[in-house]
Amino acid sequence: MAKQISSDDYISYIALENDKVVGFIGLLKKLNGPYMILDMMQVSSECRGQGVGRQLFELGKAEAIKAGAQDLYISACSSEETIAFYRAMGSGLASIPIKELAEKEPYDLQMICPVIDCNRYSEMKLTENMIRWII
View (spheres, rainbow, N blue to C red):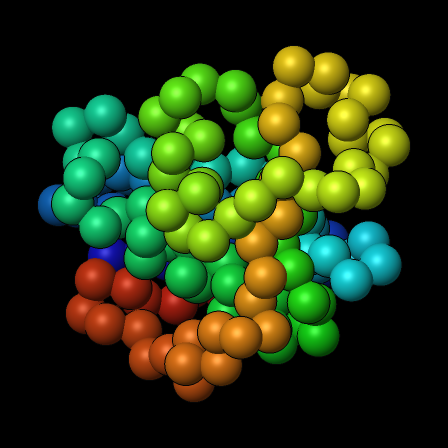
């Protein structure tokens, strides 16, 4: 189950399993040019490989589409597992990194994931495991 938490500046989804948080994604609402910034994402180690991360990432893409963004921008931790995940989601290296983010996290890889070709997510219905919660 995922719940959405929203504020004036931030959109978050948390993935729940038996009322336990097993993952989350956080996005900045304000676009940076053509980008919606994926600020944070994590899936607990015991739930990796079960589609939790993919569902959260797809929710992030859907939010980017709704906001009019062309891409998700990701300042990704440089671990092999993290980079492999984002690449599997369709992300690649940003040709022109956002300077402030690159300077803030100099060891992160600056990546983008196109969302404009992901119209199937714009009408995505939340499954029983993806419940929207707005604050």
